[in-house]
Length: 426
RNA sequence: GGAGGGGUGGCCGAGCGGUCGAAGGCGCAUGACUCGAAAUCAUGUGUGCGGUAACGUACCGUGGGUUCGAAUCCCACCCCCUCCUCCA
Image 1 (cartoon, helix red, strand yellow):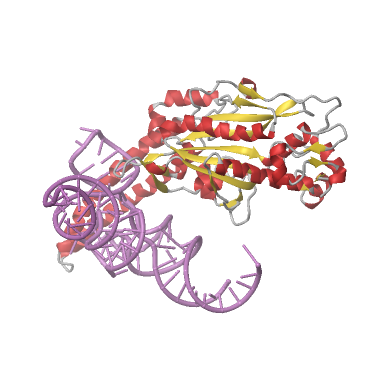
Image 2 (cartoon, rainbow, N blue to C red; image 1 turned 180 degrees about the horizontal axis):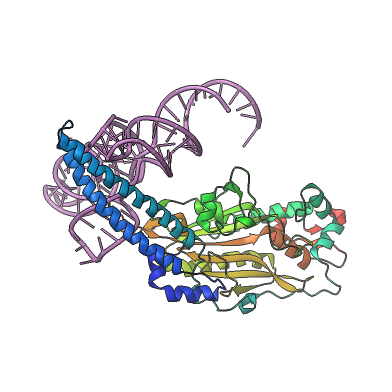
């Protein structure tokens, strides 16, 4: 959420930023509501002041006297008028926050300006693309042939975009989760946290999924939402809290399944594990000092990349353009992994700095010194990594001519196998 | 799910219709004392909103209601605790 005062004071900049995001918003309503809000606050404050002074008189006066009745009647009219203002004020404030809650974050100055993903900027490339003396197969063919991915039964039991992992695939998924958690907790200084997988409306609003993107989320009939990412419960862990500045930065790493309706992506990535309604992800979340947040974003991005380097999977990093940036992000890097069968890089992680956008929505603040004024923290998060897509990348990059798949070296202690083949079925 | 108890400031806890942003304690900060520390004493110590400021105003789980006036009374909801039931 943007700050009301700042938004109105720098309206031209905000409008320009929204245009870059392809987001057309009308701010005239906001300006009018803000003006009315101020009027009502002034009226309210003055009336209350008067009322409180009259209350002192009421206390002193003889309750049976005529003067008492007279004064009471006078105060009654004042009280009724005050109530009307208060009702209107509450309405105006609700309308203001309704408007503010659907305004996306302002892109950071370093974000490339552009209409869509074609304006994204490649930042780095790592690793050598694998060469094959045969035509590399897509992971779904490999997985089905090896008997470790079962899409058909996934569809039977749950529906499209649900899959059973069996044997080595299930084992590798589990190995990847443990491997990622171990690297981030032991080497990168993150604190492991296992959050609830269902969250309430306030949590979804705090990180920015609501109110705008309710149609994208799975919802229970008790008004709970299946988390689309661990970002939601983990960021909201500190909602409505006033943190001690000395604690910052706070770093969490969480494994969770993620649930996404994928509304509006019909016909996209229908085959394979790339786009599922349920997938596993290891997520990094940070709460940091505002002045450090971009430095912290670089570190977080590097922490995520480290996983791919250890798995020896070729990747590139892309800075998203203003047109491709997510709703809450001020800056976002995508990490894309090489998929030989598709002969392209595919997103496997998204690392974002939200600055104070989520912190303001969720009221997550800190105090620099014991007596200092509270300030909003900056929040960041990134996948490190999307586990299902990592499995996809391993299957495709490590495939052999005979249809078997070599297990990356760092994973072998976790997986307990060094090759997936029909013969090796555990 | 049933019965009872409870949600007040960073924490504990009093208040149960007007003098309450709220006693008292703990914690924290500053000062005094001390060679230093502990102890002790003194002073200070919430957040949002409006305002350059002085100051004003709002906030006692959340939302409604009663009243000239609500932390205090009424209603609904949420959450926590104890017992029973159930369960992993």
